[in-house]
Image 1 (cartoon, helix red, strand yellow):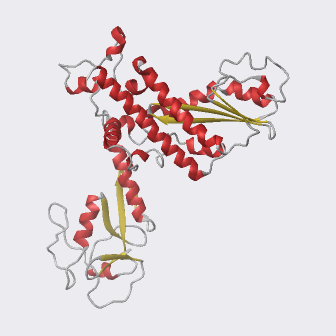
Image 2: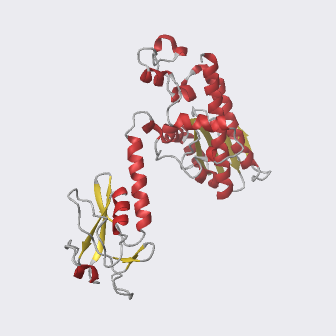
Length: 372
């Protein structure tokens, strides 16, 4: 590439030299003893934008150099700058690894490099790395709480502090003030279980009733949209054990008797098309979305295989939501398989995400009320 000087800015051109008035080409200045370019050096009759460009590149960890057609670096001179076969080569440093900047989509490449540096920085922190850039979450619907203007600012503040792991839990207080606080949850007595955000929002028996209310609310929201698209002839059962009477092709009354996990949240049986949908909803902590998904899949594999043996096409749809609003990456796809459009599936996923956050804040408020 060749850098051309304009009145107010620089532009990156192709290898072919374009026409212009004399003295338009940029000159690469000499360097100071520190290695930086000397911004006081004059250009070819004009001041050059090269020092400013070099400053921006240094900020983005990008190095610039002149290179020939054989990709070897060349020394700067007046002949080199005016030679159309000489181009500018840019190398970007990403987390200790150097990559040559491509001629096309350079802006996207630089943006991706900056995002990778930020992710690397988050993952190195002691507390914040737990919820940094979760790979199992669908980030297109996981941050609806920050875009919903109808939500109270206290809810948004709670989510921000909880995701940053800066709420005053017993564990955090013991880290900040080790001589004054112990990290253990007071509800577990001698068990000495650390009071983390995951323990408060998902693992403490003192808040079991709030966990159930939060979970049932998400189940009702999901079921409401699915029922609206089902025909009246389709059988739908909620929190009911799967029985042989639900299947017209089943003549064995004991076919489901040996299945321990035979009470999913929702079962949809379509006898006309010989289809069965098993819907399961779970609200786990945000850093274990994939673990909760795999647990549910293994739990209902036997029920799914039995339905297949009866001659029905069976689909197991698992919807996992995080206590702090993260949505599992397969939730939207699962809602589409249940019959919702992609647009409606994303709307429902965002709504359930906000509902999970509100339920999580209720748990936190109860915890602060019991021992502030």
